[in-house]
Amino acid sequence: MWTATFYLQGAASQWYYRWEKNHGVPDWKTFVDGVHKRFAPHLRSNPLGELSHCRRTGSVDEYVDQFLKLLARCEDVSETQQIDLFTAGLLQPMCTDVEMHSPATLEDAMALTCSYERRLQITNDIARGPARPAKAAATPSSTPSTASNQAKPSAPSARPRRLSPEEMAQRRLEGLCFNCPANFPRNTSSNVPCGASTSWIWKTTTTAPPRPSTAVGTL
Image (cartoon, rainbow, N blue to C red; front, side):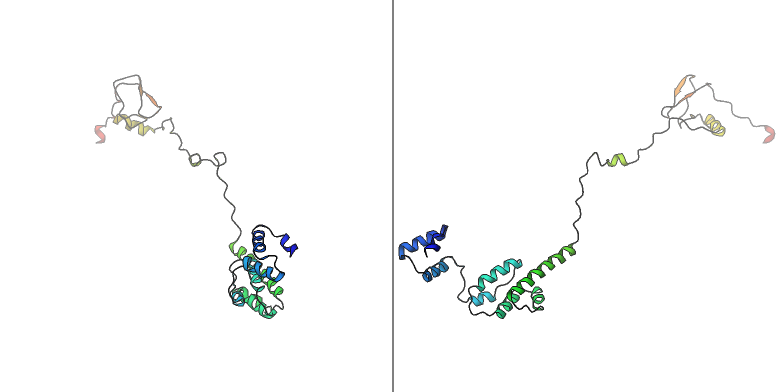
């Protein structure tokens, strides 16, 4: 008793100090019963029924720990019954996977359960597929802007189109400029700006050329 109570700490030390002050130094059986009443998890009066309702809701390690805690409070439970209760709490489909191997001991059933949990994790990882690499953030230096990628419209040529003699004769008759559709002024003999950009025309005469005459004999 002295050795056991020497290593008590925290809440357990305070509990035993009050116990010894009120009831004196207890014997070993009374001490164990007092520890169970104060610090043991609260269970129903039917520990075997509590064990039979134990189910796996998380990982296998968490289920095994809970099952062993409940099993420690049950008496007269054979190895076969322990295996049946353990596999029943695994739920489907892991319950059937373990039962197919007919484990002889509870330790074998626990080992098989851990193996099937690992296989299930691998199967889920394969079904999800490899993770896609994250796209690198675009930087102004590495990614050109959309405007720069678009083809720039070519600047209009400043050089006027060369007209054929027939087109030049027709424009003279209509009084049009050789470089743009505007009317050509006839009252100046200097450089005259043309309506077309960056183009000029030189007027050499102030009168329109004579119209071609038609011979009487050809009518």
